Image (tube, rainbow, N blue to C red):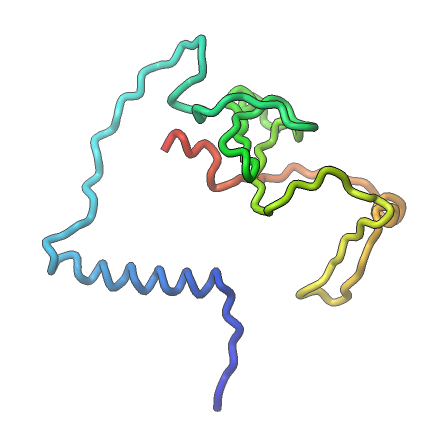
Length: 158
């Protein structure tokens, strides 16, 4: 009996990486060990300004993109913007100060809201398509506190 199983690219790569790590771990003693020893804690000097903090923010310039507060430019093609440290003094990050990670080749300059559709499909009981008007008129507005973090956030500190 053959069991067909759909494997996603992510799960395939994870399995491949995990099996490689297990193989390397088994060879560590044979090769004399190659695991990195923990380094001694580094003392990072206190930063008092007046310029950018090299121990927290990336070194990129602050830029103002449409509908955004000044954010740190990491790359411009595609646009990657990092939230500066001062925005983390509050519990919630304002939408205009939220980081930007863009992975598509083009940036939309406008959206025709009369033609825009939200498609709910995939592993759902009832796939459906909604217009912006449907979303605004058929559903009660609500707000929730949620965590959304990019794995690259504050990578300049690492």
